Length: 471
Ligand code: HEM
Image (cartoon, rainbow, N blue to C red; front, side, top):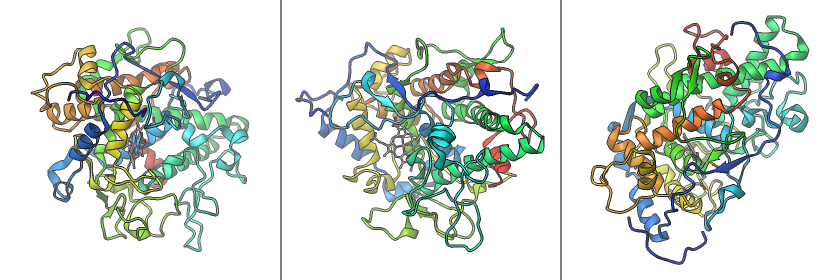
């Protein structure tokens, strides 16, 4: 694609105790920055971006085609991915219709796996997230339609909005139930520590450390490898002779004091997850129909879309066995990582995007607003160049977001990311753990999970959901 010249429309082992181990954030803000500071921005026109976004719209026939399922990634990992995104990055300030300098942008999430989306600013700053009757625990919500209290929903205010550390974790039922699973995981960790007579005054910090470290272990051992494939994973997560644990070997992601959030990751590479979203989902055995993520209707029937920012409908508690392989279950699959986006994301609900644009268009516009270089320029800088023709791309440059998806589609059959985006995703996710003085990878590189699991010494999402009591 040749950028049309136009006036830019400025658009376990010994237990660790104590406060020092707690991944407590001093502030809930971090900085954005660039991996490739010297590369020129690629600025396509509105017309070019709209045409490209339109080409990414999957048709009803494509939506229904089982060949578009990714046999390697169960559907639940899509939403672990979204939950991770909401833990580490939140660009609430950049504008789509003008260029934005990353140095001047603030990410309202710390670029750390510290679950600030779950814990907010802690009990002092965000007391509404905590249970007044047992303040070490996080507050859960109940289904208001049932007489008996069942902790199946997020806590909500009288208007139905979720009381959580990141509002985006209530955008649809699956990520909302994922957030609830993490709340219940933390609370189950508190119960576990009490059963071991852990001193009361240290439980707050120890529960948060255990929760975060098991989550971090899942990110490293049950998540990143699925996204980037075994080859890249083997290059970035390597044995460390000094500590006899594992370490992240980074070639492109470096920082001075603390890691920053790279816009090449937040504005392009990590948005691959949008293409993994299925058009519709089977929630459990009670609800017979497959329910679409969103509806094109302006005021849709509440039982005909998964969009939330409202209480969970009565029978909609997720059966996690349909999302993750748990006790031999056969879950729904994610869609392949490719250049097509399921139809419910073509017209976002007004509660998500006022003008109801497609998510593909928002991604492309955000990449331009963040002045990202083209995909080809980044691949050249990383030594992963492929001829455009091999990637079925037109001559010239391609917006980085689209390039990354095409690389996955052509070079990995959409089963995982390609060499450029895969390396960026692995380096940034593992690099953030390397740069976080409170992460297990930095503090105790030989640490192994201590909580009960199907296989001792490791921990998966299935183990987390079972320990939390939701599966
Ligand atoms: C139905 C599911 C999802 C919906 C409706 C959704 C929606 C959105 C929207 C509306 C934005 C803001 C777009 C913009 O204006 O720039 C966004 C940003 C983003 N999304 Fe998603 N998303 C979903 C799933 C995912 C998944 C599965 C991932 C990754 C695995 C992901 C990664 C991201 C990232 C990295 C950003 C940028 C965050 C930031 O820096 O603020 N999303 N998403």
